[in-house]
Image (cartoon, rainbow, N blue to C red; front, side, top):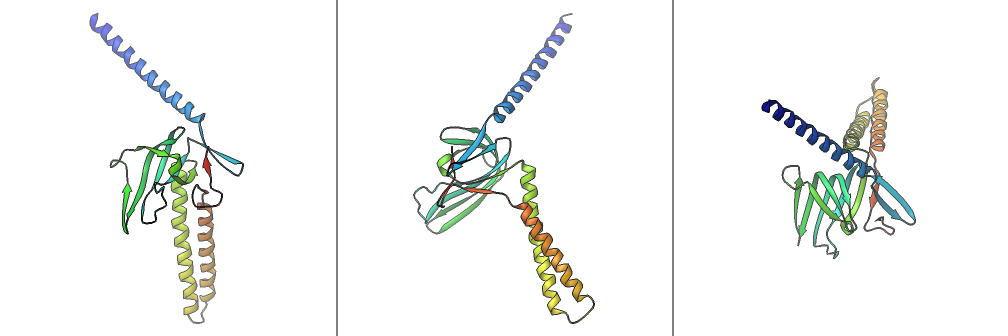
Length: 207
């Protein structure tokens, strides 16, 4: 009888823990849905859903010294927005350190850095927004595919001028046009709006 009661007690404890965890996840998602990243310039305001995927460029060179800088690009999800900074869960990123003509590049991948980083709003140089990580990967794949199609199109066009008169010559020109057109189409589809916070006459600002 005592064993049965202990078994029931353990099951109830597990169910309680399960439902509490589920409740916390739901509350976290609801809190994200109610919070947006707002940017503005010249009276125009844009709002980005925090459930999306962000690419943020960070420039820590506050003094404008061209001989020394530390810049980073982070990709991931925004967890929280405070008055002075943004907490981000980084999926991947890269950093460039430059000091007196010496430059060092480093690639940030999961496992070799703390994924949760705090980014000062004043250090944000640029931003891109995607509906999801999958959307970002698809757009970047389109860039590669579009570039390859344009390259092969140019190679085919060059071959058209090299070969002599033949039945296939017009086909080469037609094929080059199709490849170039498809490549341009892929590049247009891959375009994603970039918002600059530095080095322009009317930069965006985070509200």
